[in-house]
Each structure stands twice: as C-alpha cells, then as structure tokens.
Length: 493
Image (cartoon, rainbow, N blue to C red; front, side, top):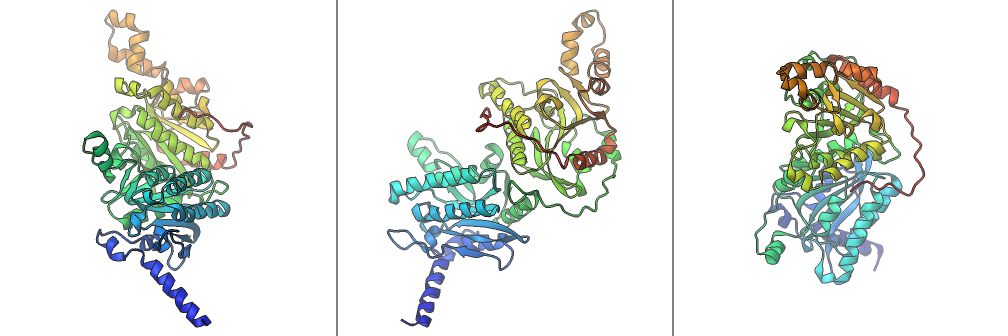
C-alpha cells in the first residue's frame, strides 16, 4: 500500500468518525450536532480535534461518542469536549472518559478554561465495571481542575447519572431550558422504584433546584452565554481577568440613587455603580432574595453579591446563603474582587428553613467571605442588622473597605425589634412606636454612630457610589494576603 492509498484510508476513517451516528438524528430535535456545538463556541477555523479515531474496545464507536480538542474564544485558548448523543446516546465509558480526562489534564497544564457540551444518557451499562471506573476517573479529573481553571458545562440534552454529577462539579452550568435535563435518577428509574411519576426539565433545574446558573431557549443562545461568561473570567487561577477599555466616566454620579426607598430593585443600584450599567447576573431565577453576578469597574471584572429588598425584604434564606457562598468562593479562586451591596435585617424566619439547616447554610456564607483574600468592598445601602450583616461581608469578617449611605441602619437589631426590646417600658407608657423607631434609627442605628465607632470606613452620598467604588478597587488592586499553612480548611458544607 503506497502513501496515497494510506492517505485515502486516513481521510475515510476521519470522515466516518466525523459523521458520528448520523447528523440527522441530532438535527431532528432542532439542536446542533456535537461538532457544530464546538464550532459555534470557538473562533472560526480554530478548532483542533484530538482523539478523533478513538473507539470502544468491543466494537466501532465513532470518536467513542465524544468530540474533544481545543481552539480559541476571542483569541484565547480554550479546551472543549462535546458528548455525541448519536453514538450510544452519548453514554460515558472507558475510552470516552479517557478522552475527556486528557482534555482536563491538558487544560490544567496550559492554564486554559474548559467548556463541555453535555448530552448523555449516563453510563454504558454494557461495559460493566469499566464504565463504573470511567465515571470515577471523570469525577477525579473535575476535582483536580477545580480552582485551577474555569470549568463550564452546557447541558443541551439529557445529562443523566454520572454525567449529571460531573456537570455539578463544574463552576457554571448553562442549560437549554427546552431540551436540557439534569438528573441522577431519571423519571423511569424513579417511577420503577417508587411508583410515582417524576418530571425533569430544564426550567426545573434552573429555577427550582439551582443546579443550572444560566438558561437559554436554544443551543445557539447557550453558546452565546458561554462566550459572554468567558469574557469575564481569567484563564486560570494565576491570571487576572482581561481589563477592557472603559469609556464610562469613573466619576459619573447618579441622582437616581438619591431617591431609592422601600422595596427597590438592587439591580438598579448595581447598574449605576458599574461600567456601562452592564450586569451579568448568575442564577437569576434561583433564591431571588439574593443577587449575584459579574460586572466591570474601570474595565476590570468584579463579582457582585447583594441582597434583593424587592423579594421578601432581602432576607437571607438557606438557598440564598448557598448561592452567594458558592459565588464568592469562585471569585476568590480566580482573583476577582467582590463588591457587596448590603440591605438585610435578618435571616429568613420559617420553621422549614430551620429544619433544613439555616444555621449551617448561613455559616457557609460567613465562611466564604471570611476566607476570601481578594479585594472586598461593602456598600451598605439600607439595613445592616445583626449576624445577617456579618454574613454580608462586614468589616469584622474581612472586608477591606465598608461604606454606608446616610439612610443606612447599622445595629444588632432592626428598628422594629430594637424598639420592642429596648424601649418596651416607653411603649407601655403610650409613647408612639413610630417616633421611637425614628429615634432608634437616628441614634442607635445611625451610620454616623457606626463611623464614629470605626465599624465602617465612611458615610458616602448615594450619588457618589460609582466614583468611590472605582477609587477603592484601584487602591486595593495590589492587595496581597499570606495564608496560614494548613492542608485545607473545613468549610461547613
């Protein structure tokens, strides 16, 4: 066989592998094929496939059901893998997982993000213990890159069993809310085991369980979300996020912030403080009494964590605490400063919250802020009461700078509770509760009193929030913290 014949055979083998199980199977559902998903994410012509000729040991499986390789997004190196549902349902097995693990290992060595497209029915039962071992390798690989490089999962079809667990080990999950489903045990398994029908869908994963951080209505929109997310993130834990040119005036003031009162939307405050009023919210449909997401100040990425007064008064629920804690820890992993907008007068008051471990979940949030070493700035917009304030990046918990608006209330108790406990005798004497609460706010809970005690750094005018925040972050840009030597901490999970 001469060279030309060998080249012909090679081209035929690669063409056969590229067909997968047949693009028509995937296109019938209206989704993109495994390779089309990768091509939609990466810069045109940048994709380099690895392991295209890999197949299962016990029979031919094109690329063994997963397309892997690397390319660029906005000129930056990114490693990718895309499960192919047309080949054995995208099920994970020995060779399939070896390909994915190789991508994870290369991404860690090169310091580049990982983006995975998940569309799998679970493990290949026919491979027996080999498939079981493969799942374990996949979990270990995901754990090994955690905190080293960003790991993003796009769930565009079924994401079952081990694939679901692997997805939840990544940093962010983006789901196609029409076709994506995340489950360890699928509806058929649940019905067979319990006799009860169970519905599993993308919207449930996004809004109810919080398993997905972003949702979109098509594969293409999910890919757009992934590209936008990558633009805010650094390539690895030793790099800083890219700094973009900032055309928005750093000294821009906002008269709109002077009039906020009652159950306002905290996203209005965030928008007025950040570049171009652009805020990329994370888990927007989950734990709505808390808000988290990315923005830029002077062109540099910041993570924003806030209470949402328009939802249940912004109280910290167990879900809200976990949502913010996870987000803060991610920012700390990847050198992203954290800015908090605080307006909270307590943790959620409900028997169900206590039964599901509100104290433990609240401790996660306290712990996340306490252990974070990135620059931390807190702006107290409204209430900052008791231990719920501590949980929102208080100075005592390690915030580098804490500013308060003049209308802020900073005290161990809210005005309503404080008056009830401290001035019960005066209430019995017939003194007006309204007048007593007003006096409490102006004395016991006054931000001026907190500034005098050194609990906060300054009281600022609301309109000057953006320039003061920009100046604070510029000053903190060179922050360095020497960590105490220990194997690792023991966060209250």
